[in-house]
Each structure stands twice: as C-alpha cells, then as structure tokens.
Amino acid sequence: MASNGVDEQIKLVEGPAGYVLEDVPHLSDYILDLPTYPNPLQSNAAYSVVRQYFVDEDDTVQEKIVVHKDSPRGTHFRRAGPRQKVYFKPSDVRACIVTCGGLCPGLNTVIREIVCGLHFMYGVTEVIGVDCGFRGFYSKNTVALTPKTVSDIHKRGGTILGTSRGGHDTSKIVDNIQDREINQVYIIGGDGTQKGANAIYKEIRRRGLKVAVAGIPKTIDNDIPVIDKSFGFDTAVEEAQRAINAAHVEATSVENGIGIVKLMGRYSGFIAMYATLASRDVDCCLIPESPFYLEGKGGLYEFIAKRLRENGHMVIVIAEGAGQDLVAESIEQQDASGNKLLKDVGLWMSLKIKEYFAKHNVMDITLKYIDPTYMIRAIPANASDNVYSTLLAQSAVHGAMAGYTGFVSGLVNGRHTYIPFNRITERQNKVVITDRMWARMLSSTNQPSFMNPPKGTTEFTD
Ligand code: ATP
Ligand code: MG
Image (cartoon, protein in one colour):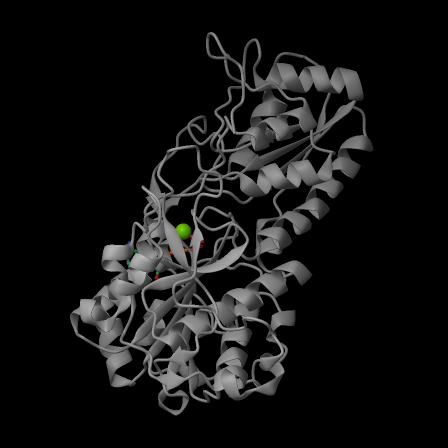
C-alpha cells in the first residue's frame, strides 16, 4: 500500500538523526484505504469555532517525553482525533461493541460514548452489542444499541453487554463478523482481550476485509504499558480509600489493632501504591514487584511489632499478587482464559500474623481483614474516569471512521493517540521499585524496604 501516499507522508515527520517512528514501515497495515469522504463534522457549525478541530494526519505524539541528548527520539504514535476526510460513509457503517475480561468502572461509559459518538458525530445508526464477551460472536444474541438505550448506563457499574473469559476462536469470530456484515469492531478489555483483538485484526487483514478493528484498553490494575493510565484506575483508588478507612477505624478502636486490606493488582501494585499514598493511614504497602519476608531481622513481623509498640495500631495494604512465592502449598490453577489463579494472600497473611504473635507470645493483637475487590470493580466510574472514558471512546470512533485499524486509543503523555495492538500486549506495566514513585510511597509509610540494600548504592533513580 505504499502507493496510497501514507509512506510518503511519514517522511514529513522524519527529523534529525534518530527521530524515527518505529512503526512506520508497517503503518500502512493500520489503514484500510485512503479516506475519501468529507468528515460530516465539517458541516457542523458548532465545531467550526474550534481552532484546529481536525487533526492533521501527520501529527504524532512522542512516546518518551524525556529524551537524553543524542539518544534516539524513539517511537511516535499518531495523534487521535477527527480527520478532515473519513474512509467510511456513515450510512454504510455497521458497528459492533464487545466487552471481555473482568469488570472495571467506566465500561458502560465507553459503550455509551461509542454509540453516542457514532450517532451524533457521524450519523451512524447501526450499532450492535455482542453478548458476554468474545464467545458472544458465535451466539445469535446481540442487542441493538441506540443513544436512547444507552443514555444512563454510565451511572451503573459493570457492563450492560456482559463479559466472559475464554471462548476466543479467531476464525469463528471473523466468520461471524463477515456474516453480519460488520465493518467496525470496538473491543473493550484487558491484555488478554487486546491479544484476542490483535488476532482478529490480523485474520481480517489476511482475508482482505475492509473492517476497522479498534480496541479500548481496560485494566483496573493499570498494568497496560505505553498509556499514561487506564480508565477506572482513579475510581478504584478512590473506592479503595473506603476500605482503608474502615481498616483504620477497626485498628484504632482496639489495643494493638491490625487492619489488613487486600487490593487488586495481580502483577502490578499501582492501586495499592496510589491508595496508600492517597490515604496516609497505611503503615505498610506490599506489592508483587517488591519482595518481602516475614521472619527475622528486618522482616514483616518485626516491623509490625515495632509499629504496634509505637502507635498501638497499624494498617497493611497488600496487592493480590504480592508475596505469592511465600504462600505455601500453592497448587497452580488457571481460569478459562489461561490466567494463573492466585492464592488469597490477604487471608493467608492474616492467619500467619495471628499465628506468629500467639505462638511467640509477642503481644495480644486484634486483626481484621478486608477484601473490597468485588465492591470496587462493580462501582460506576467517578467524574474523572467518566471524562477519560468518554474521550477514549470518541478517539476510537474518530480513528475507525478515518479508516484506521489494528489500534487502541490511549493517552500518551497527556495526548490522545492511536497505538498498534502489539505495542500494548508485548509487556506489562509494572511499578519500578527503583523509581522515585516507589520511594515516595516508602517515605509516606516509613516502612522498611524488606530488602538488603545493594552494596555501594541505596539511591533511587527516576
Ligand atoms: P483482565 O485480566 O483485566 O480482567 P483480560 O482482557 O486480560 O482482562 P482475559 O480473561 O485474560 O481478560 O481475556 C479476555 C478474553 O480474551 C478471553 O475471551 C480470552 O479467551 C481472550 N484471550 C486472552 N488471551 C488471548 C490470546 N493470547 N489470544 C487470543 N485471545 C485471548
Ligand atoms: Mg488480563
């Protein structure tokens, strides 16, 4: 597709040495064809007052905002937003939306805004919702989505479409997309879902279909790389405060009270870290990225005893994936999507602490364990996540209408962008315990690092 002008346009953004778009050679893979129809938004007087409402096709956003002298400038992504010309004629569009994986605040907002964005911005009227995740493509159960049917769904938690794990059969899904004559597919879900979306996109290209596949990454844990943050994360951190408050009240109401709160975070401890920083009532935050140990000098038991002697109470926040190596007799099990099932580390740790303090006669303690996971996942998005989800959905709609495909819409350095699927599925975003943010968290709890400091340096780098 080099002749469509896309590859030539890329040269415009090539600059000084090292100023490269890593994805450039393949960029034409992400465009269905040249857009030829004028964007219907051009005739809407309301937008004409906005300076530079339309995004130039060559506008890009740099992934790395801080670039050291003489080092490569790194990857750029296409800036999201409406284009002057669109690939799809609105009356020809038949779109579908599917949600997969676990619940996350904001799912319904994204669904609502895709439907309303397509309808009100582009005049697209045919939008269907796929029932209960990827496997819903094989069933005949779909629901027609209109601005009226989705008008107040953002006030509800969960997803009105239902969700599921497992059941991904790329070929059957694409057969179904073809049978139903769908030409825009919006896929909302986490890392597994976006891997599935990538497979669907590749199969669609292999079959030469003119179908745009757009993803909206969902992860309450904030473990998707490249993007600044995922929708629902702020809401989760905010709601986690209620559990931490409850644990604090319980702990301060008795002598030597310990409150333990388990928060989401299978592989990444962002929610635990931010909830701890926000609360200031937390004495110790444990996350998967930071190993810890229980017994002996500098261990967790010693720290608990110290804090109780000093303050008479303490609150521990633990991410669900923390300390999995310590949890005894772990038998490896998987869910329907092939994800490893984790042991309940919060419950396990509560029992271990009680057992240790009783056995060693350290002091009488009262321990309360709170697991607010399902309460947090099920709430509707807060104001900032509603705004964020809306903008992500609108960006996805603009991208698909322009004929882009194989992308997710995501915020990079504060700018909305289109990111190729593979860039967000190739690794996980994790808390880097040598970064300043973890050091800031440590200084708010004043907990030990539970590590022997490496010889020579204890400095944190950013
Ligand atoms: P979360 O883990 O945040 O709840 P997720 O999207 O990662 O969300 P999963 O249950 O892992 O949730 O996956 C959702 C869907 O994606 C499932 O239907 C699963 O079959 C499919 N899927 C997962 N991994 C892949 C993969 N590598 N290739 C194709 N499909 C996949
Ligand atoms: Mg996942």
